[in-house]
Every structure is written in C-alpha cells, then in structure tokens.
Length: 214
Image (cartoon, rainbow, N blue to C red; front, side, top):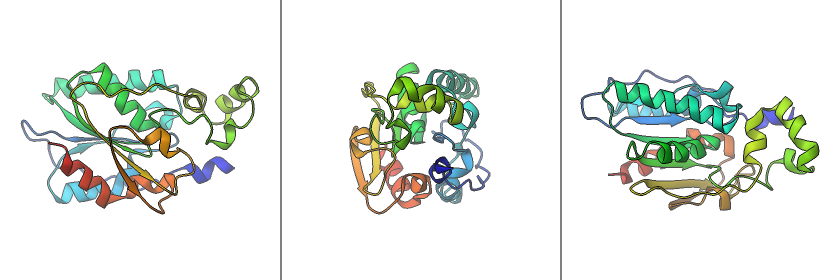
C-alpha cells in the first residue's frame, strides 16, 4: 500500500531522565501513522545530555480526527500540570506539529517553544496523492483507509502563532508530503535531501532548534 512509505521508522524510545523541579521537558508529538519511537535518535541525544522528555501515544497512531487527538493531548497536558510541570517545549512532526500549535492556543503559556518538523501548520490541500480526487468522493474512502485526520488536513487551515510562543519550523527540500508553504511559520530552518518520514530522526537540527528556545 502506498501509505506505508509515509510511515516514519518506528524506532525504540529510550528512557527519559527524571524531570527535575522547575525543568522544562521536551514533549515529542508524532505525526499521522506515527509513534513515540519515531523520535528515538533525538530522544537518545537528550537523554545523554540529561534533559527530560515525554512522548505520548495518541489518537490511534495519530489517525483520529484532529479534534479527538487534541482533546486527548489536552488531557495529557492536564496530567503534566498536575505533576507540577509548568511549561514544555514541543517537537512535533507533521500533524503533530499542527496539534502542538493548537495545544499552545488551548493552554496559553504552557508551551514555551514549538519546533515543527515538516509540520502541517496550514494543511496540505494539494500535496497528498489521496487528495487528487474530488473531496466528496475522497473523504469516505480516506476516512476508512487512513483515518479521519487525512480528511481534516487535506484542506487549507488557518495558522496563527499565539502571543509568547517561540516557534521554529524545520522543513526539507525533499519533503513530498507536506509542502514548504504549509510548514513555513515563525522562524524557518531549511534542510536538504531528507524525506518527510525521516524528519523525526534528524538529531542535529532538532537539538540546534531546541537550543534557540530560551
């Protein structure tokens, strides 16, 4: 199935260092058809540096509707707040970046920084092969095969940066799933030759972007 080539390498998420009092952990948000292990490489680098991170599974591998996934992640944020965590820096891949932006709007001040990796901030109305048919014919088929999220993101979406959020967008010239025009929001960093599904494994640019958030 063509969809399989869009699935990021699963990977194995390492254990996070404990979250120390007052520390700002990294919240990894996988994309559609993804899982926390997609971030194995940058998570391992963070662990080696002693920085804590969390990476929830959500939305049936991110295939549920954006509203369903957002509600689930909002509940997860409430649990983090109950643990005394006051802020996070989000690294979100594809639809995970879009959900990170929506979390920042829904929980003002909780998201200090957001790093999008090929993030579908503005939707992908023209790039996905499944969206080449007319939407009335396409939506039931896509919803059945790949989940409601594909219907939700294959349209133009409004994207605004909430006040106080530091947003960095990392996008690749080789991304054939989410066009650069959708990912480009806030401060932008272009990388070359990296396919969309490989973006969560790009340790160096991710760590460099995290270092920019203060």
